[in-house]
Length: 106
Image (tube, rainbow, N blue to C red; front, side):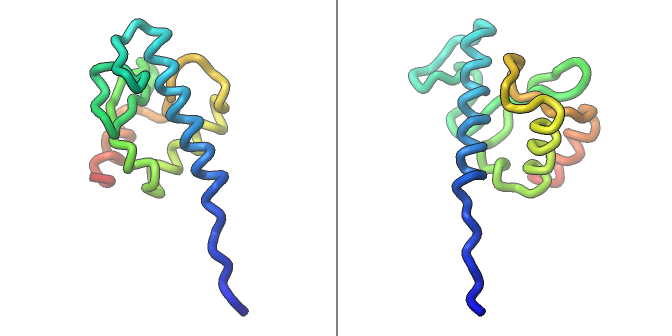
């Protein structure tokens, strides 16, 4: 029995949709934009997420999208907020938990 290679297309499409939403949030909230549509304060290869009750803004590397722990956070965000909201990519967890998780990813 041959092992079938997993299809990455749906996951890739979902990640592209997340990044598009992130860039459109910057436009709506007055952040200065670069030529690629992202806010100027977001370095190339990164994106902004909003965490916690106060929606604190964090800039994270795109490479984290492939990390299983970060994917778990994205799934939680999708379950709670879906993909159709105007408030940027919001991670539904406490800031302390987010910082602990990101220290593990680094």
